[in-house]
Length: 389
Image (cartoon, rainbow, N blue to C red; front, side, top):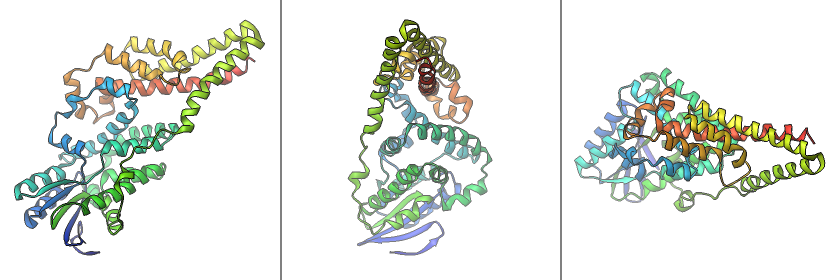
């Protein structure tokens, strides 16, 4: 299947009449950038495969892509939590790259430039990042999502402790994959979808690349997985599907409000008006105060905080609307992001302070923290209400 590598990061594979030169890189390594350029210039392949999907390719080629971000659409499509997690992952990689004075993904950019220089085709080998993240998100429970979010926030500080020597060691497991693999110990679904599935996807896509001589540039953490699945024919269609939302979770979203309404009815009917009124008071206070506290922690606009307090007791009884979506939209209107906020997004996400300073990420924080506060408020209110029966 594979010959002895001529370099520790170069692996030669064959598929029918194709020769594939697989280069494993650390995504923020200067040595990786130089290696990629030299191999492509020397080999002059027919095709250069890169570990990019169409959206990430366009992002690298067009640095002003963030200008098209529609934050209101993100909130309405219920993707605020997903986008915030994506930005936190990007932040970790960018912080390491900044310490080493190199652009994240520079080896991919140079691979594309080198391919243009030698007249090679560009073949995008990775699965759409939105599909990967959506599949991961759908497979995770609510509490796992919250744990992941806070783990990503905590990981931001760890980036400052990584030296250039550490990065070079990570060539055996590229930096972002290493972080995700570590998280995979706590969240097995991350390892399965973000690493294992993509190993299969990359392996098949590289095999499908046109030409007889192909150079494939991937993160070093995917090399062994690609070699593992090299002789396995993989159907890509199932790996590109976004699974439907959990039916059990959808059922709970409807049953919980019905249960709460039932408790109110039971309280008014058997306990009288005072008991019912006290139940409503606890419900409104627990939901409203904790949702408002979430918006406050996100440094939301005063109107946003007030909206959170007023909306949470009602939205918690409606499975189609969340308090965070309402407060997020109010924040977006009250402090509408300007072009400069979107342009500075990539630098602001390099620090925790920047997440709160930038109007785009602050809206995402408002959505997430308000929803979190409202959810906690629901589970705080229930036992308090039950004690009154």
